[in-house]
Length: 106
Image 1 (cartoon, rainbow, N blue to C red):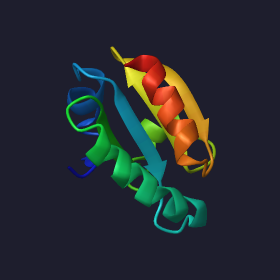
Image 2 (image 1 turned 120 degrees about the vertical axis):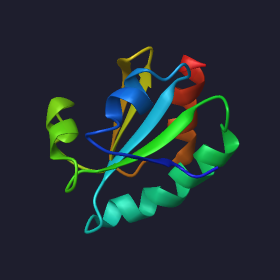
Image 3 (image 1 turned 60 degrees about the vertical axis):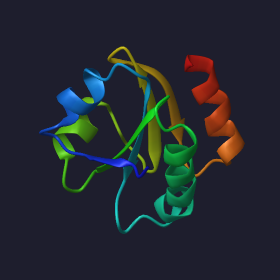
């Protein structure tokens, strides 16, 4: 399973209305640390398939969503459950740190 591409247009239907927790990666093509964390996000999409929806938001193409959620630096990962932000992770962090926060919402 690959991460879902999230846009300003589909954010509500894919994320807010999701019946399982969501991990969203706010990123940009020019961002070095985003490239570091991208393989971790891909792994998590496979490992948590069916338990957690994993999505990616390109902040350059989807500025409304980035502004709405106060994304000031990237990469930023949000964990959303029942339409509300449950946790925020800023920067390229180790996989174990993300897994720990995901397990807290499962």
